[in-house]
Image (cartoon, rainbow, N blue to C red; front, side, top):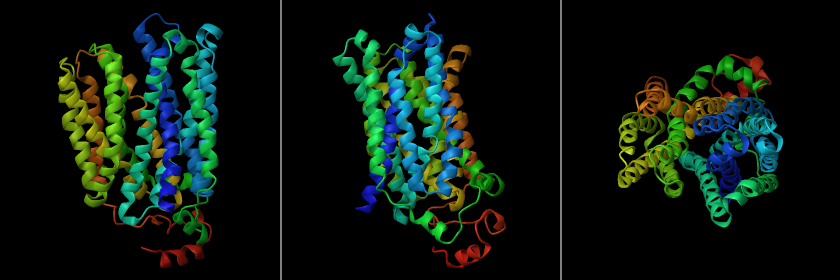
Length: 447
């Protein structure tokens, strides 16, 4: 029962976090009309993608704030605070006036709200991943952590359903005037309910152990950059392939296929919804496979598969055969599911426990913010401004190659290691509370 509680408390937060992300993607074309006056469609698309990217670029700041709190005050307390702070900007977006109503102030307010939202979300997903890993049975850590990604995809799917329901029940004018606001207001209220649910969750055994043995880092941010820098750089390399491929597959491609390949928006939206629903089933299976095969082999397989298949897949996507489109996107979905079932647990096991929240949140947020959040705008620019029509896919293949190289040379197998890792602290007693406690803990640390 305690395992079910851990999964639910973490996954529900991810559902709502990515529900908002999905809403912004679904209503992106409408946002372009509502908040940007430009007549040129391409300028509106790039402006909307820019607002999308801003939220991701602010996540590293949130990672520093919530990561610090997670390593000092505890995983459970930080997860309560992060979901509470997500609720406010989500509600605000649902109440924002349009450009027609207040002029240039409208896109500025939207950008500022997305920035606050990005800061709030900065530690939410990483905190969920850590909480699941630190409360899971040792032999099923990847399986448990995979439910964080499953929750994220459920959120995106719910956003798709919200978009479909709104477009069917409301006219375009009603959707334009007030319909798009309702899902945001609904999400903000749900975030508040999740906060009350999280009041009941217990702290992880890893944090309790560190606290009991007085091994909490005095300054987790300093610890990461002074003593865990190799772990931090490895994490950035590991994240590179999966985050760029995911946003390429589920954000850039739907807009690309509807705008440049002449597929109807509703047809592409329905197909993407089906693929995301499939991924909800595939990701826990991928986590289970990862628990059996190991992290390193899975990371290498995933990154090399993306590297080899993304370019030819993108080439054939432009053939205008729907059956080919379905086959390629299905293949992309399976690859993405394997990656999501592997990467997050690898990041958790990569970091020593005292600065784990800070290190993981910061590296994951930078990877998602700078690499993932900018994928749509970079791919859009590459497709428009280069003569090589497969340039967006080459960019993704290059990111996958970085991950493959980092994993091959620098990432060890970690599936059988304890999560109470305190390596890197023995030579820095000034970073922990109590040198005697350090000696006592290292002698008695459980395997």
